[in-house]
Image (tube, rainbow, N blue to C red):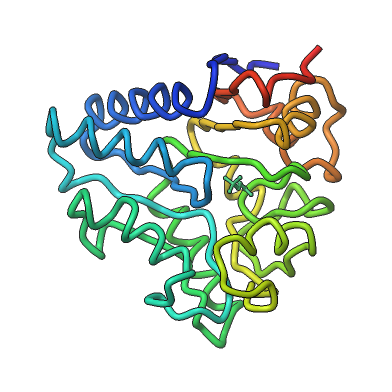
Length: 243
Ligand code: PGA
């Protein structure tokens, strides 16, 4: 296994280290294609990255970003859509334009066509560095346990535990969408480099499975075991089960 581990103390240090990594990645390749993630895990990293880019600006006009997933049924300007999250958290502060920021379209009625369109987009452009968080159940993107490793962009039904975990962002639990469009496991593995962030005790079993578990579709994160270039930044709590 060629996974590179970076151990940090806590969420703050993880966010700083990850931001420094992405700052350097943009610095060394102004035309970089970045795979982006939403959720609590990358939020601190995005804030730190904006801070660094404000203090020491880099040209951003030629970078492109590609998000992992989007809820089905929410309009782009819905406060809970991942597009809105990305616009508020990263795209607007960095003044990234619409034609350099790609997120699957969850409003479409023809899901199959949207999945094909998005996968083609990924194949045409290619992702240099993919940022990932991980779910407590080991999901990456919205690829829940049992998702085939050969899956490309597809529509998924969200697990009750995932809907519960994400309910904190919605007024009522029943408002959490039941489906999402996500890059598949195979789509994620096509990235040249992968950086996975994990903070907190709830992620410790998933990190254990990545490093010590058998490669199995029951733990989607284990698909990363054979990728040639994976860096994992874990804080003490997320690393607490590693042997
Ligand atoms: P989180 O979600 O960053 O909000 O913990 C990660 C995930 O579910 O992939």
